[in-house]
Amino acid sequence: MSKKIKTEFHSLASLLRFKEEVWPVCNVLYDLEEEAYYKRLSTFKHFAIFKDGDKVVGFLSFFVDSLSMHSKSIVLMGIGHGALLPEYRNQQLLPKASIQFLAKLILKSPLKHHFVWGMATTHLSYRMGLRGTKIQYPSLEGNCPPLCKDLLDWLGSRYYKETYCPSNFTAQISFSATGQSIFPSEKEMEDPIVARYIERVPTALSPNNKTGAFSITPVGPNVGFWVKKFIFGKKQQQKKKRKV
Image (cartoon, rainbow, N blue to C red; front, side, top):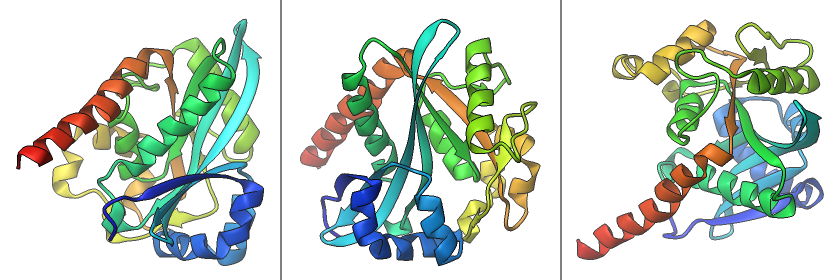
């Protein structure tokens, strides 16, 4: 394993040139046929690819939408289908790539209101999302401001119209994650975040779960938190390593 994992950003057209390299990563972590995988990729327009040398070890896809709602000009960045081989986890590769891509969108339209959204089909992705933000809706207590609720309903209708449930902000997809780690341990079940996820998606405790829980994050209130966590936090970790 290389010390430095490279992150590359691609459009759909450029990603398709080496889609066969991404497929093995997806095949390891999802119950998804290859033909369905290629069809799924076509729903996204933007991607991050993670490489160890020349080897693809993970990927992340993004939705981007612009709309007007509640008298606001809004940009929605969705974090979509992604995968990272187990040995490359715990390096914050996915959240860092998400923030890098978000920064590009903000620079293009700095005066608009930006939101990040995603749908978690495992407790792992749900927990990563909540731990990686200061403010996210629905909150652990179930609170969701009117604008965020309307945005989630808009997204549910746009991308998951057949299965979206507005009462608990969930929907179904056509594939499921695989592997023993997708089931929370007894210790993980004590985590309020995991418990809340199971409450929203009871089928998460069953094999082949295809239901996911939506979440949405307003960017403005989270900027300071992200800078502290992913920039200053990284520098502090580097200082500790040097001392050791």
